[in-house]
Amino acid sequence: MCTTRTSSTSARELLGVSWIARGWQGNAASTGGALSFELHCTTATPRRCFVAVTYAVASPRQQRDAEAPSLASPPSEATLVIPDCGVALCPLADFVAVVLDKICADCVDDPLRSVLDQLRAHANPPPRRPRACAAAPPAWQEAAALVAAALLGVFLAWFFGILARVHRRRRTRSLLGAARNGDTVLHALDSPATQRQERLTLVEPGAVL
Image 1 (tube, helix red, strand yellow):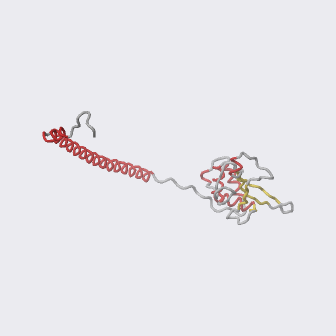
Image 2: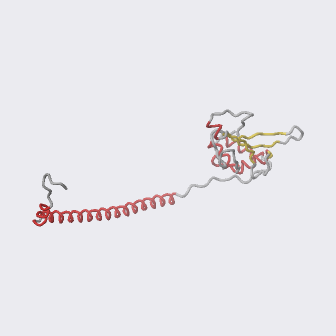
Image 3: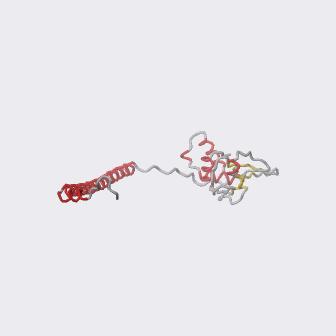
């Protein structure tokens, strides 16, 4: 059973399954949800076993109200079909083969690695060739990427520096122009004609406007 969002999402990607739960978007691995695997076997001989995969989750309202699931108010449950199986009850041998085909054996350490090797040895049908992990890029590619990123950073710093200088120059020019206009106005106000005009417009005390 996968009860965390990370494990449920990883298992969904591994098996290629999808689900839609009531009140949630498609493939939403919500809190209060669980991806479960059930093994069902026949009683007759020869014994046959099947794997059923389901996803159950409490609805948003149940989680908001802290409502415990019950028979009267059960959680939303979806029966999942593994694409490589094609049926809800996937035969155990097919399920093991699907999982082994999807797991990168080079990324698994012991003791799980030994278990996978045993499963591969007894798998029926036999799994395909073990999938290799993606190789790391060569060192020269990583160095080239770092150099390119550094050059891009230098170019962006130079470009935005030029924009900042142009903006400062334009702002300085506008301030100088405003200062010159202010000096012209002050000189005009200080002229005798303006002073006479200002004296003519003075209002005497007690005058009615």
